[in-house]
Image (cartoon, rainbow, N blue to C red; front, side, top):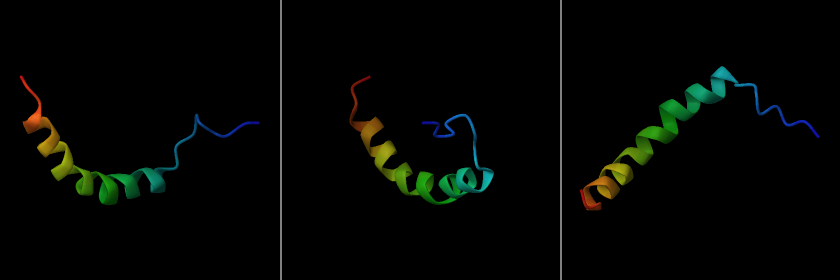
Length: 37
């Protein structure tokens, strides 16, 4: 079975950049602040 792991759909990638990453940013910043240096 071939899934197409080696192809990237530019529209899906841009949707992820525009929608998902900004929603994760506050969580990531909080997580990083809680980690010991």
